Image (cartoon, rainbow, N blue to C red; front, side):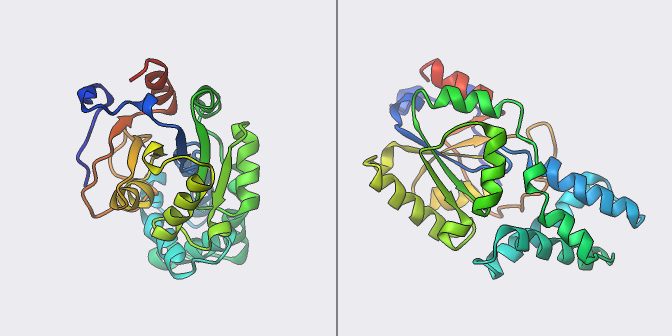
Length: 253
């Protein structure tokens, strides 16, 4: 459940401006990389082979909790193993066979997931104003492949593999705190930027962090491949794209 803030409705008299921050920490998948397009294409092909009469959106919704469960119960598994576990669990949920080849196709698909069209340029613009940090539910190799599409040098990269857990675990935000401290940046000057309310905004807000919601699904009902957060959360700013966010920074909001 979301208390929705629109960028245009922010009360800038609160003495909180985007330009007050020194560093941005980013979720990657769903925010910068279109993971729903990547996962959805694999699930669509599998469903079609087995005659599953569900839309791609319905497949993503059915998939969402299975990946989150795998991450919670197997926090030290590399992300390809998480994807394979989630694929097999989805098959059990739908009563449809998942072969080893099917699971392997999803497990190895991360390098094929596309970047959002606005991600590269927006990150380049934002890098003129902030240190950029990645905090992502992925393994090191998977992020390296994705970062080739983003084409940006990040000041720090924190993956689930390097931390030993997956968001929404607070261990990941503890690791972020340590990283920011090592960079000499006060915690109150860090702004967390993410699409997922479940993985990012709920845990970040529980730690008192300031956040920006990139509402990539603003034109679509539901939460797609992201589980329902089952909590009320109020991001400090909301934008529908990375480009809109970068515009707001450059306008000095």
